[in-house]
Image 1 (cartoon, rainbow, N blue to C red):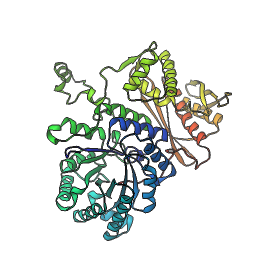
Image 2: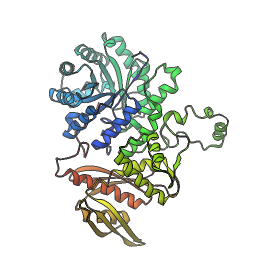
Image 3: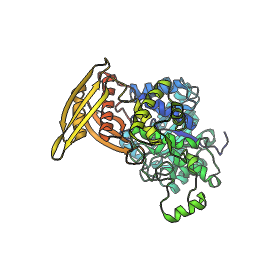
Image 4: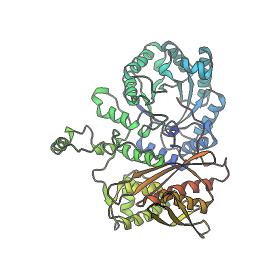
Length: 521
């Protein structure tokens, strides 16, 4: 690999999933991993196998599928964590063990209560053990940006001597600024004698809004791997945004003199997939993938665009996978046109999933004249939710009157084909529908958040609803879509209820359901 090639290390499935409300099921993680493979990332950090049995199983399943990129798992510097990562990732043709330990004075004193020498011994022992199991080992000194430079150089030197092939320098709490981070990387390049024996990597958080800028500063100073997430999701204010870092390097190639292997035409479809799965939609003004990223309203800008696009666009929408024409299908469109458009949008569905999504498309086409890309995405993302039993929504009827409680009558179809109906009152139509669902299914939830997002444009646009609920001390998220927002919310709630009923007693969770132990670098 040439020295001007930047490896893209995607940690959406590990660090990104740690954002509150962003936990994913196994099926969702597999879908994201497939999209990341099509995006052509170099490394997928699939999770933290020691965090929970679910995390272990999801990392193992992703590795065993052999999507193409190197599959990596995170481990603390202890033998049990390292063995679990190895057992999880060994099924992939290319696999990596990523070990970390905190090095800053703040972490040494208040979290680890370990002396400098103890931390170095711990790092060396962990790297050496991992290197006995695999050829590709990454080491991260957590909170590196707040670690004394001399000590940081000492730790990095020891880790490389022990066998680390990649050394990652994390700005764990988003504290540094570009000029300072540039100096840190140049210091390591000048003061770590064996620095050429490993790839330098950078991992930045966005607490001060500088994760991308700090990552690019590190790259300019010698880093050749960027750790990032789709849409910049992650703990607190998030991580370095993959699409922003990649497009900065591509758009300003004459400045950086660098390149990545990313297929940038897959950026927008991957962004949409992750936002639909997590329920965290990028702000309209989000760079690269936001709805306004290629929109021009000011008259002078529109005039310039009509003369030549480069007057106000430094990249083309097509470069990031945004189609020039968004209006695609109607009620008379056939199955082949439907399937072809889904492929263009980045969805790889099997025959069963395609048929189910096509049925939902036809139902929607009877309700609205024009079907947009956003409508198709909503159909695909929600076709496998509440319909995956044990309960399926057959009908919903809602009555509301000013200054009176709302009433919802609901009919569900069980796995045995029997229909069960019930009705309930509530402060509003959504509350009434949720109460009716609880009466039929026997699952009582505590609603924590109800988020509505328009899937496309126009008065007849589908509403995408994401609900976050609490059940038995665990947090769950569900999604639903419909031109009727009450029905969308009902479908989102039913998706969660079905997931809870499918998993059985607590402890028998599907990989990715609920919350698990977290680790951050």
